[in-house]
Length: 251
Image (cartoon, rainbow, N blue to C red; front, side):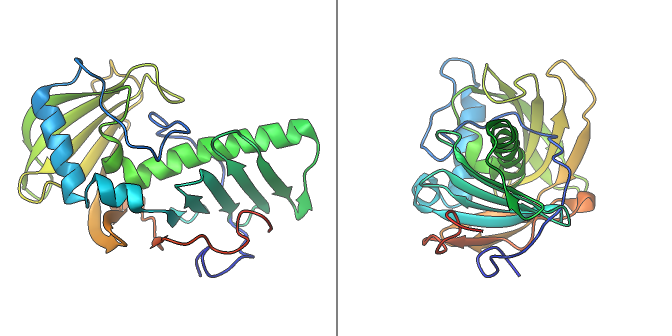
């Protein structure tokens, strides 16, 4: 049962923020890459990725996305309004947060929280969880965001032997952890990202993790990948152009 269909699911997890490099409250707006810093070839490849995923217009037209973050929690995101609802599995914790102004609601153990300190703590947690969890789902649409520097690293092979263009992503004073670095493998034929590597520091030579990006499927007007190889998956994924009634107003 997904967030779109069940309004009373209790979800669990510890808020582990592994990859929180990129996001801000302007996440859903059209944006441009850091001028003068990125390689021209890398920028062109990033544009090809966007086109393969459905294109900028299709991404802008996409409104509500829901997904499950590796069985730890479910998220519902209204990309147009900036509202996010997060429900943890097993741990009785729910957060509704407005990414634009940080306002929202928190429920712990079935009790609505009213103390300013508790609200501030868990609303901040909710935004950081969304930063992390959404990047795992929609990173290909974020390659040309402000503050992202792209460098072309030549060609490489993925574990299945397919030829890919390798891009490096670093960040200029954006996001929660701007010292991170990523490398992404863009399939030579499909122009879809088929693998990524995460580096905790941009100076690191060895990644903290490498994951596949697989099982691209159409959702609305865009493509999304829900399979992260050995790490697990992000299913169920849903995309709609209408906001589920009451999901950002009540539990």
